[in-house]
Length: 206
Image (cartoon, rainbow, N blue to C red):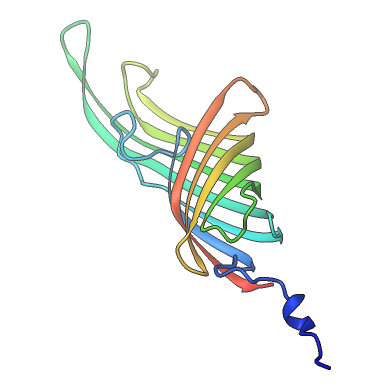
């Protein structure tokens, strides 16, 4: 009397391309938004911002991530200002603008099959945005005495939502494209779109 091969009959098929189960990830990407300058804005020289992201996988489909990006414009100019009496007066000025955003977002995977290379995520959370301006110079046409020294700072909390597309290049490396829209909690009607394209590296097996 032969013994039934129960182990074969009850075995569960294994996916030929299973989704990797990593706990942490880091990412870098080229970033653009109305807050952080991309290329030349309003004719001013500027930096090309890079966003850095650190994430933790809470569940197979839910992750929490922190992202940061900063950008600046600065420069100087000088010349002369024509006066009503036909004379000219010299002017000079220096300026510096800096914008920094730090986001805390939840990332929920909408794709139902984890083993697929292409994954779509929903994003939601908050962004802290800080802006600063510093300007000094001499402009006799607009300022009494000619000299000025101006400084301003502003910090705002934004509500952020968006979507993301990921494509798995290897067991640890993914190409990622994120698109978000943020609105200030001071004025919910004002929307700021942003986008990131980059790479994500996964590590720390569960």
